[in-house]
Length: 212
Image (cartoon, rainbow, N blue to C red; front, top):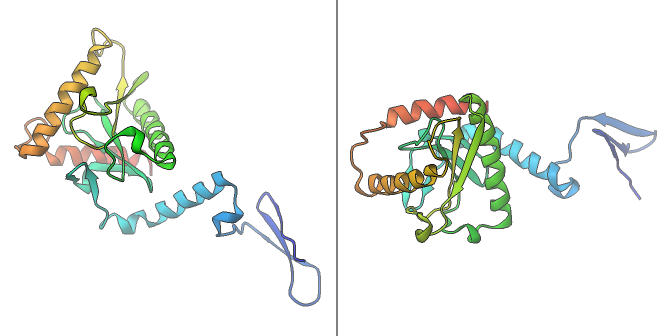
């Protein structure tokens, strides 16, 4: 019977033919079935990042029925992506969405749910620091009666500072209004008065650098 010993990156396996075991350091097994779940996920993310440069020219991002320009997406994983906002309420107001078009939060798979919130955590932490904020608001409008206007799950992330809203709960009413604005803009394809595509692309470039 052949045995393989693993200890902090050291893998020991018998040599072919005569002699003792051969040792090699830093060799990571490529099959996820031989790794702990968290290591398998890390390996998957690493491989995804390695391919991201090649995929950047071909990846299509959908937000409900709407196609999102790749230049406006600044962070992505195999299951989620983050994009800048058409009309942000505050500096750093962005959206995190699952790659798959899913209308309601309850319809996400367990893997998508976990990845979506891990992505929101990563993005929120970087943007809070970048904008010199001291808090974060995470908000989901799950369904039409909750204020959702684009039928695709998305998390609003807003870096917060003292005094940015006179009454803290006012931010939720403001998010509702911005949701309506966003759908109107996407549906009617009007000229963007508040933010041009170039402005959004430049902001995405700034945020993309936070993850490089």
